[in-house]
Image 1 (cartoon, rainbow, N blue to C red):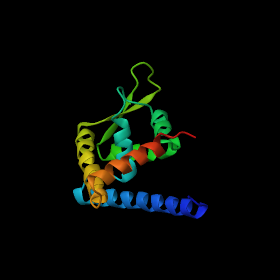
Image 2 (image 1 turned 60 degrees about the vertical axis):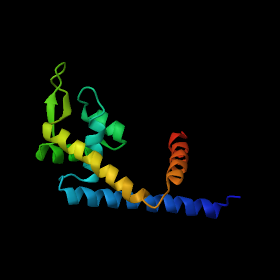
Image 3 (image 1 turned 180 degrees about the horizontal axis):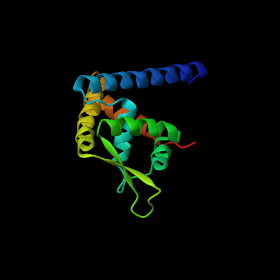
Image 4 (image 1 turned 60 degrees about the horizontal axis):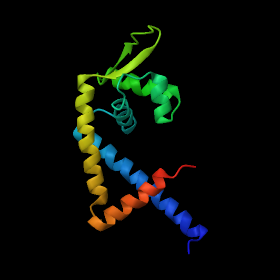
Length: 145
């Protein structure tokens, strides 16, 4: 039977795993010289899911951060040529964010980084354990409060 102490232990294990994933991804990003932080890589991945370039407010909402945080991320990515600000064709007061060709290339490389990080983390698990973990994580991720 589960006890509050075992739940605390599980929560701590999940937090430690999350920190490990973050460290591995950060190391992989650095080793590949992509010139992006984990937060910037998340913004690039999020940006790629829009059919039309989103507004900064749209990005902030999707990333669940304050708009100022998105501004800082976009500023850095724009300075390195990975995104650009473009006027909205229907409302010139609105600015949208789009990937540049360099941003698309980095995004493709980010996919490799995430795959390599996952392989490193999951290496000790058998195929059966990976499937079981995937099912458990689906349950946790798909449960809404």
